[in-house]
Image (cartoon, rainbow, N blue to C red; front, side, top):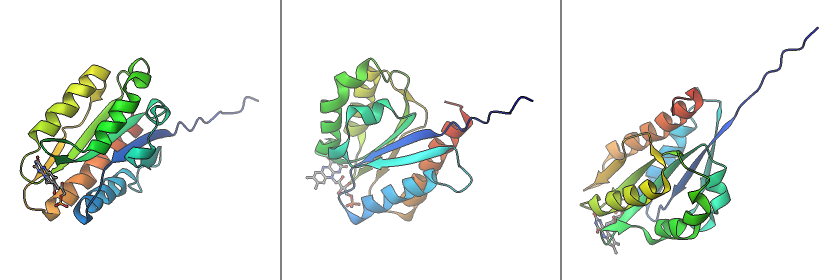
Length: 162
Ligand SMILES: Cc1cc2nc3c(=O)[nH]c(=O)nc-3n(C[C@H](O)[C@H](O)[C@H](O)COP(=O)(O)O)c2cc1C
């Protein structure tokens, strides 16, 4: 008698985020909490701090969330460093990678959004979720928006809609 083969295709959602303050740490934890929602069991959520990220981590991910502060009208240096180190190793191997990003900006966020959009266009990654720009005075809404962002990415990956 044939045995049924159950293939448990676990997908990896990689989160790379710079969280230098209590507020940004709260946002990161909310993203991870949303991505790890108990109803989503087909996704392995992996957080790697920017300095520890290697191109292989991105190449083996099925989806990606990037989190950054805006500093001097640009993404945080540590996030830029990830792109600097991994860009060419990823270029021919991560086209179509579903991703999104969130930005914590004191009052703007435009330059960071533009820069990430430009670099990821070069990489041909696929923006599957509207980026979140949390600007101005810190608000509890940012935390719930981050949680929703994480959950939406994770649920989308599990459902295979990206
Ligand atoms: C050196 C420095 C430069 C900054 N530059 C910008 C900027 O260009 N645009 C902006 O919106 N916020 C800027 N900020 C504010 C940070 O984005 C904000 O403080 C950071 O995201 C942490 O958020 P929190 O204060 O809620 O913890 C800057 C902060 C620092 C320390």
